[in-house]
Length: 188
Image (cartoon, rainbow, N blue to C red):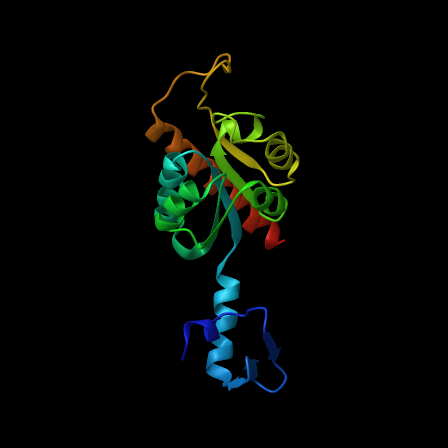
């Protein structure tokens, strides 16, 4: 069986009443339908990791989130450029996209957004964060967990400088609390 037949995709029509899946001209049996439903149900939360420039911070975030949560979350990486996106995908993301439009389009479709503080600051990351990207991320209804890493003329008052590994540990802790809170609300 091809990899494409294990995913509910654009060309799939499910017929649960008869226990078959029709996918691109092939009928698949009940056992394949069950595995597809299990795959679709395993994701509790869709997390977007957004980064730019070389994608190094996004890469570390993607690795740590994947290591901590495994396949229980869906990781979508969004880079301001193809280099950043490629690096984050290699770090263990489920999917990725590059550019202004990709970030704008997906910012409102995820459950949580993580990345450096610059993703909500127009012209940050040496100009890679456009005003439209900053607006889309900031106005997304998703909670945003942002690392207080600044460059240039932006300072965060009363923030103690911490090394990146310490900041990522704190981000993972906050993400874990968000996921637990989401699961509690789901069970009510």
